[in-house]
Length: 347
Length: 75
Image (cartoon, rainbow over all chains, first blue to last red; front, side, top):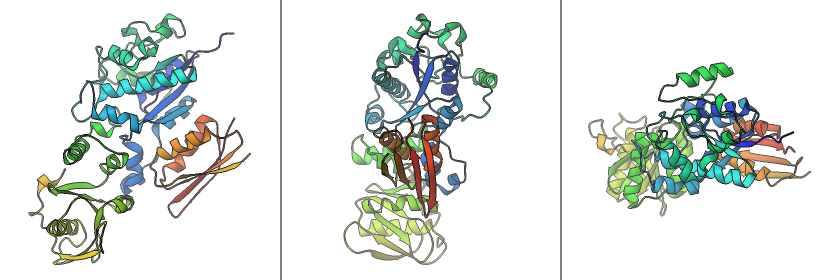
């Protein structure tokens, strides 16, 4: 009896990678999933932080997909290695700071290293020609295969019939005739295939699973790099960009303002790293201050903090300020009016 | 069989799952691992990870924003 061939499937938690793995599983191949955590993933973090998201049912979609398919899932922390993809994308960025083509090449390369280390035979992705404007085009498919080092061990079951034969097809580990020729941005073929497989519940991130595709998030990351004077980040930096309102009222400092109790609690974990302030006479946000500040800056920050609290219409609001050195200070301020708040401050 | 503890507090998912996965890789079948977390997502994600990878959740506890998931390493 032949030993079944082994494939690792990149599982994002979305429908396409789920279908691709299912197609190959149904051909008798042993499939295990792999999921990469870059630090920019949307779902889990926002669920954990914000009150409104805490009410949503929680699930890690990649784990959920693996459970539906009955396959193992390996979640790999690539935060450090991924920095080079974000900072120096060889193929550039998309509409925002999303380095989609470099990202896909990086993930397939990491999957290829995993395949080599664990004695697997090939890699599966849920890519579809024409589905994404930057990373899933006919001309970029070979780029990913080549630059990742996976070459013809990379199989895209959903559009394989439109691409040259790969090793698993040539060696008859999989039946090319039972693969697909999906093409273009339409989701109808995937939805029809899901129905055929009896898959009714699936996440629909379709590119929305990464903060780097988000315009506002990208603006905040650009602001971080501009104030640092260079493109670099640590995990705490990119986590904080996901939380709160970010305002830069003057070039030398930025405020991170919690939007609800969940965010305030989360920001509390960073008090040791920042000057912070909060209202004592009225309920309101916890505010972190990033940058060097003068007394005049702190007074402006306190008036903005008061603006976002329940005392926004009061004549005086008491704000405590705790700096990294020295004793806590107390301000009594008049909250800024809506006219005094400047749209340009919002990052 | 031995009993181990893992501190995954102040980490947001999926980091508690990744830390659990990495620790389990160092343990023997039958060993017990007690994972301490603060992200409520861990209450769902660690058991889900156990189910897909053949490990067994022995107990889950949640009190005062602290979560403890205890698992037995599968073979």
